[in-house]
Image 1 (tube, one colour):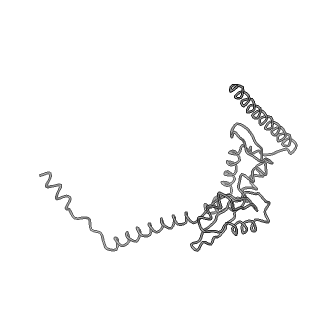
Image 2 (spheres, helix red, strand yellow):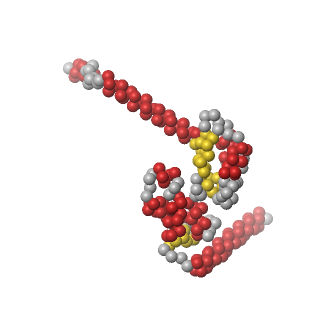
Image 3 (cartoon, rainbow, N blue to C red):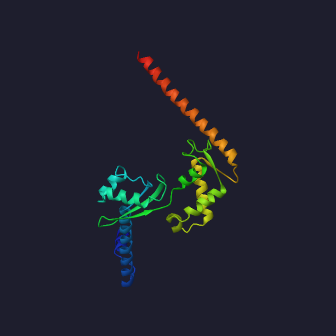
Amino acid sequence: RIMVWMSRARRAPLPFTSRSTLEARCKMSKASRAAKALKKADLRSVIQTIMRAGQASPGPPLGPILGQCGIPIGPFCKDFNEKTKDIKEGIPLPVKIFINPDRTYNLQINKPTVSYFLKAAAGIEKGAGQTGHEVAGMVTLKQVYEIALVKSQDESFVLQDMPLENVVKCIIGSARSLGIKVVKDLSAEEYGQFLQEREEKLAAEAAAREAAVVAAKAADTAKKK
């Protein structure tokens, strides 16, 4: 009896579904598949990278990637360098390269990176080697606000409709990751002294590391003898 009931249950008719509902579901399914396909196509056709103003070159990693997409690297470098000629050479710029089906491209050059602005404001070339254990430099809240005003125009922030206050918080987070301390006020004289002391400390640490390497090589040579 149990087996008979299960067999009948399997043959039970499905709940009624109208033709219009089925068509709507079919259209939604097709739209969903189309959206996924479009998203995959967009991901394949957009290259995001950091390029330095006026310093585009045919070498890797960008050269081979553009070559695979059928984009002549020579003319591309010339185009990029021409479009960034009014920007200080060497400044890192976030770039989006949109590859078209006919093997042409559209170039979107954004404002310099947050790390560039922060290090420039702090007057340093590199961030902290050990984040959270050392202070590589300092910036004021006013400087952070000025950076936020510029970066708030970036596509990523605009698309999110992010309030300026939240952009400021993002900039402060980036400063912490670089080992840059955000302060309310900063004396130019005191900060100059801080930078000088830090430079001397870094030079001493580099000399100590070099001496340790030389000593290790000398000890290794002595053992072989």
